[in-house]
Figure 1 (tube, helix red, strand yellow):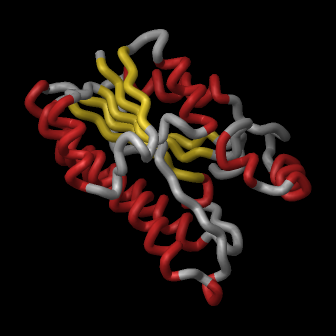
Figure 2 (figure 1 turned 180 degrees about the horizontal axis):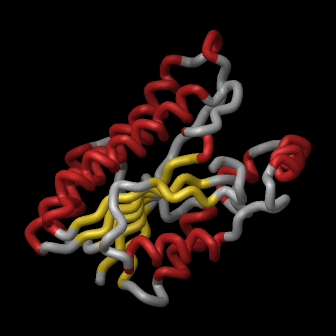
Length: 212
């Protein structure tokens, strides 16, 4: 089966690509390969690459208090996190529906349920992704196409390491398991969603108990 990973050049994406290559034919993409905010680019990619599995790791985050947001950075978050997810899903679906098989996995965030100050736009965009996945799952369940989210907590790669050390230490102290998640734990969750065709329209929380 062919698996396409958008956002495969990020910290988590690189490790995930390597892990999934053990089981699937993987195409790992960065924003330089395909700009998911550009509908035409996404359509052209899927015309040439028929994917059985699509994982969207692409994300953009900029923290700011509500009274200090930069409108241009707000637009970028919405374009990447919301419009980008819609473009990837809608362009991947025609082949999956025709083939009567597909697995779509979108990345959400623990912030969708547990927002913190200055993350309003990002948290809201991830809340959209979770609701959107539920609708997509209903529309495509009869075609054996599933759509799920993974609600990520704090992991030992990726955006977590953009957080200053002192704040990251504070975050770990507040995680009931007292540690960051591992990339292997993310890979095992993705493999589960690929293998189990009866799970759709859900958001699996892998956050060490930070949000239940």
